[in-house]
Length: 169
Image (cartoon, rainbow, N blue to C red):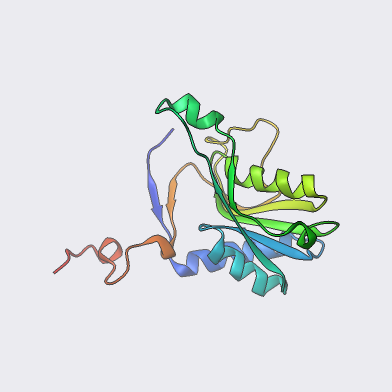
């Protein structure tokens, strides 16, 4: 698998959002943004889809050992999650920036479903080469990639030395 990085601009992100919006054939009653990656694209989608009930979820995957296999088997720890009453019997759009391994977004989707909500997942980028789930993929995605994506909100603040290719003074 290639080890490459793609730096996106705000215009790139706007185009990805424009590609996502027509995919939705029904309305959602609420949206859960996965922190931190889902906050910016989720906010843009909430505005475009006129969704007013915007919630957040924060998930961690603690591990007891330094072995990579142990990390992958860890159960999710929900640091923050919406109250059940905001989810039950509602169509929920779960948003993150990228589906890499898929662990975080599937954990949120599963919890929403277990509470009695109807979750669907949405990401800007889907990486099927890193996906840990053979039977799961995002319901909605704007692009497929095998690259490490760097979104404009992740680039170091101040003068953008990466894009300008200039050393810091």
